Image (tube, rainbow, N blue to C red; front, side, top):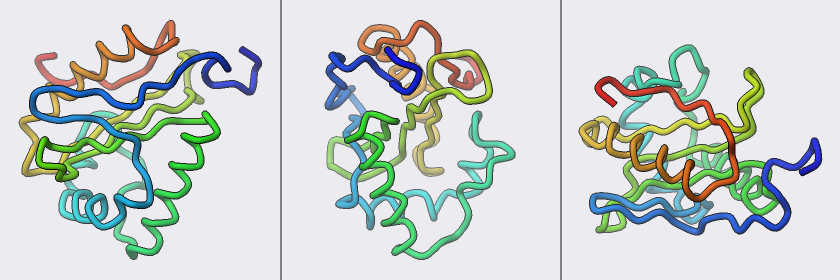
Length: 152
Protein backbone atom coordinates (compact mmCIF):
# COMPACT_ATOMS: atom_id res chain seq x y z
CA UNK A 1 0.00 0.00 0.00
CA UNK A 2 1.11 3.53 -0.61
CA UNK A 3 0.74 6.27 1.99
CA UNK A 4 -2.42 7.46 0.22
CA UNK A 5 -4.10 4.05 -0.04
CA UNK A 6 -6.46 3.02 2.72
CA UNK A 7 -6.78 -0.58 1.54
CA UNK A 8 -4.59 -2.48 -0.93
CA UNK A 9 -5.53 -2.07 -4.59
CA UNK A 10 -6.20 -5.80 -4.92
CA UNK A 11 -8.38 -6.00 -1.80
CA UNK A 12 -11.98 -6.88 -2.57
CA UNK A 13 -14.08 -4.67 -0.30
CA UNK A 14 -16.87 -6.70 1.33
CA UNK A 15 -20.25 -5.95 -0.22
CA UNK A 16 -22.15 -6.90 2.93
CA UNK A 17 -22.15 -8.53 6.32
CA UNK A 18 -25.22 -10.62 7.10
CA UNK A 19 -26.13 -11.51 10.70
CA UNK A 20 -29.30 -12.93 12.24
CA UNK A 21 -30.75 -9.58 13.42
CA UNK A 22 -29.21 -7.16 10.91
CA UNK A 23 -27.09 -6.80 7.81
CA UNK A 24 -24.57 -4.21 6.66
CA UNK A 25 -24.89 -2.86 3.13
CA UNK A 26 -23.03 0.06 1.54
CA UNK A 27 -24.65 3.38 2.43
CA UNK A 28 -25.74 5.44 -0.53
CA UNK A 29 -27.99 8.33 -1.54
CA UNK A 30 -30.86 5.88 -2.03
CA UNK A 31 -30.95 5.49 1.78
CA UNK A 32 -31.47 9.21 2.44
CA UNK A 33 -35.03 9.07 3.78
CA UNK A 34 -34.51 5.99 5.97
CA UNK A 35 -31.06 7.08 7.16
CA UNK A 36 -32.35 10.53 8.06
CA UNK A 37 -35.27 9.11 10.05
CA UNK A 38 -32.93 6.70 11.85
CA UNK A 39 -30.38 9.20 13.13
CA UNK A 40 -32.61 12.27 13.60
CA UNK A 41 -34.75 10.24 16.01
CA UNK A 42 -31.70 9.22 18.04
CA UNK A 43 -29.33 12.19 18.30
CA UNK A 44 -28.94 12.01 22.10
CA UNK A 45 -28.48 8.25 21.98
CA UNK A 46 -25.82 8.49 19.26
CA UNK A 47 -23.90 11.15 21.21
CA UNK A 48 -23.87 8.76 24.19
CA UNK A 49 -22.63 5.84 22.06
CA UNK A 50 -18.94 5.02 22.56
CA UNK A 51 -16.86 6.73 19.88
CA UNK A 52 -19.26 9.65 19.35
CA UNK A 53 -18.86 11.64 22.56
CA UNK A 54 -17.52 15.12 21.89
CA UNK A 55 -18.01 14.89 18.12
CA UNK A 56 -20.07 17.47 16.24
CA UNK A 57 -22.24 14.94 14.40
CA UNK A 58 -25.08 14.28 14.74
CA UNK A 59 -26.65 17.70 14.81
CA UNK A 60 -29.98 18.57 13.18
CA UNK A 61 -29.73 19.25 9.46
CA UNK A 62 -32.03 19.31 6.48
CA UNK A 63 -32.63 16.15 4.43
CA UNK A 64 -30.88 17.77 1.46
CA UNK A 65 -27.76 18.24 3.59
CA UNK A 66 -28.00 14.61 4.69
CA UNK A 67 -28.25 13.59 1.04
CA UNK A 68 -24.98 15.44 0.32
CA UNK A 69 -23.35 13.64 3.25
CA UNK A 70 -24.55 10.29 1.93
CA UNK A 71 -23.22 11.11 -1.53
CA UNK A 72 -19.86 11.94 0.07
CA UNK A 73 -19.82 8.57 1.86
CA UNK A 74 -20.74 6.80 -1.40
CA UNK A 75 -17.93 8.66 -3.20
CA UNK A 76 -15.47 7.66 -0.46
CA UNK A 77 -16.58 4.02 -0.83
CA UNK A 78 -16.23 4.10 -4.62
CA UNK A 79 -12.79 5.72 -4.36
CA UNK A 80 -11.77 3.35 -1.51
CA UNK A 81 -11.02 6.26 0.88
CA UNK A 82 -13.48 5.05 3.53
CA UNK A 83 -16.39 2.66 3.86
CA UNK A 84 -19.77 3.44 5.35
CA UNK A 85 -22.43 0.78 5.71
CA UNK A 86 -26.10 1.08 6.59
CA UNK A 87 -27.22 -1.30 9.30
CA UNK A 88 -30.54 -2.75 8.17
CA UNK A 89 -32.97 -5.16 9.74
CA UNK A 90 -34.15 -8.21 7.75
CA UNK A 91 -37.22 -6.12 6.82
CA UNK A 92 -34.87 -3.61 5.14
CA UNK A 93 -35.45 -0.88 7.74
CA UNK A 94 -32.34 1.24 8.40
CA UNK A 95 -31.43 1.10 12.08
CA UNK A 96 -27.86 2.43 12.14
CA UNK A 97 -24.50 2.91 10.45
CA UNK A 98 -20.93 1.63 10.54
CA UNK A 99 -18.05 3.89 9.45
CA UNK A 100 -14.61 2.50 8.53
CA UNK A 101 -12.09 5.24 7.77
CA UNK A 102 -8.34 5.75 8.03
CA UNK A 103 -7.26 6.52 11.59
CA UNK A 104 -6.02 10.08 11.95
CA UNK A 105 -5.58 10.42 15.71
CA UNK A 106 -3.72 7.16 16.40
CA UNK A 107 -1.31 4.78 14.69
CA UNK A 108 -4.07 2.23 14.03
CA UNK A 109 -4.85 1.30 10.44
CA UNK A 110 -8.54 2.18 10.72
CA UNK A 111 -10.94 4.19 12.83
CA UNK A 112 -14.31 2.47 13.20
CA UNK A 113 -17.54 3.81 14.65
CA UNK A 114 -21.06 2.46 14.75
CA UNK A 115 -24.43 3.48 16.07
CA UNK A 116 -27.92 2.08 16.20
CA UNK A 117 -31.22 3.88 16.72
CA UNK A 118 -32.24 4.46 20.31
CA UNK A 119 -35.15 2.04 19.96
CA UNK A 120 -32.69 -0.66 18.81
CA UNK A 121 -30.06 0.00 21.50
CA UNK A 122 -30.09 -3.69 22.47
CA UNK A 123 -28.32 -4.33 19.13
CA UNK A 124 -25.37 -2.04 19.86
CA UNK A 125 -23.19 -4.71 21.48
CA UNK A 126 -24.10 -7.47 18.98
CA UNK A 127 -23.29 -5.04 16.15
CA UNK A 128 -19.97 -4.11 17.76
CA UNK A 129 -19.07 -7.77 18.26
CA UNK A 130 -20.02 -8.75 14.69
CA UNK A 131 -18.17 -5.82 13.14
CA UNK A 132 -15.07 -6.43 15.28
CA UNK A 133 -14.92 -10.07 14.14
CA UNK A 134 -15.58 -9.04 10.52
CA UNK A 135 -12.72 -6.52 10.65
CA UNK A 136 -10.37 -9.19 12.00
CA UNK A 137 -11.41 -11.86 9.48
CA UNK A 138 -12.31 -10.06 6.25
CA UNK A 139 -10.39 -6.78 6.20
CA UNK A 140 -6.65 -6.09 5.72
CA UNK A 141 -6.14 -4.10 8.93
CA UNK A 142 -3.52 -5.16 11.46
CA UNK A 143 -5.06 -2.77 13.99
CA UNK A 144 -8.21 -0.72 14.29
CA UNK A 145 -9.69 1.67 16.83
CA UNK A 146 -13.29 0.82 17.70
CA UNK A 147 -14.56 2.07 21.05
CA UNK A 148 -15.45 -0.92 23.24
CA UNK A 149 -18.94 -1.53 24.56
CA UNK A 150 -19.81 -2.35 28.16
CA UNK A 151 -19.70 -6.06 28.75
CA UNK A 152 -18.11 -6.73 25.37
